[in-house]
Amino acid sequence: MTDRAAPPSAPVPPAFETLGRAELDALAAAGRGVADAVRALAATGDTVVSTLIRETATPVPWQHYPPGDVYDHDRHAQYYFHAHAKGEGLPGEIGHLHTFLRSLGMPSGVAPAPVPDLVRPAGANDALAHLIGISLAADGRAIGLFTTNRWVTGETWYAARDAARMVTRFAIDHDRPSRPLNRWVTAMVQLFRPQITALLEARDDAVAAWQANAPDRLVYDDRGLEFPSRCAISVSDQVAAIDRARAGVPMTGP
Image (cartoon, rainbow, N blue to C red; front, top):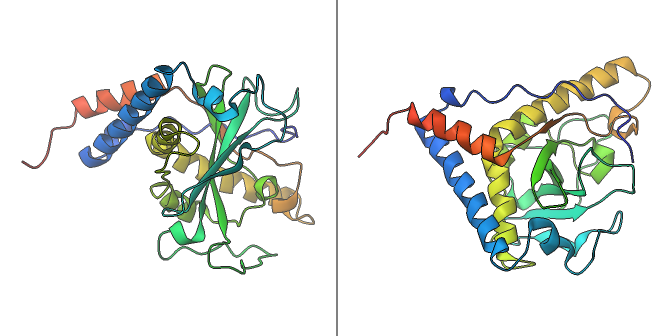
């Protein structure tokens, strides 16, 4: 699978100084969660990637890690890691995580987007919304975020405004395959909420533009469009920017 569509420009970095203190504090807490999880993994000589693929030296293309995916039955969040075949996938990554939320974990008031071929999920928990993909380097560092077209994961399509509301609901709170790993994935999604929201909006813009240029084709199944939006990320840069913004915003309350 290759990125045959030129993605739109990466979203403008978040204007953290425009966020309120409570939101900045939540982002900072997520940053600490990421750091704590990395330390816990390193204490046993592990990284995010090594914990996912276990004894495998390199991930087998298209195989899900861990087998059967990771699913939180209370929060209905789900993720898996996989790699593409050599020469495919996104630049610089050994593989990537796909993160999702299922129906029973979604906030009230959201509904699948009214796409032309909408088929409403049969079961109460069958709708699967892809939130964000996280590209990983071989050493376990997160190096990028990306969205996908519907055909990539077979998801139920939700408009960006609804998918963005789901991001705060994403959490994995159990020990399979590793509590530090699950804490890292959870904290990463929360730490980069501003970018994820921007990427989802850019995704919808790119999909609309693609459909306008090919009105005789259903864009959601068009394999020429795979990654509608993406951007590079750095955890250390994100945390530093949040800390600078917090330093300029006074504490509120007691």
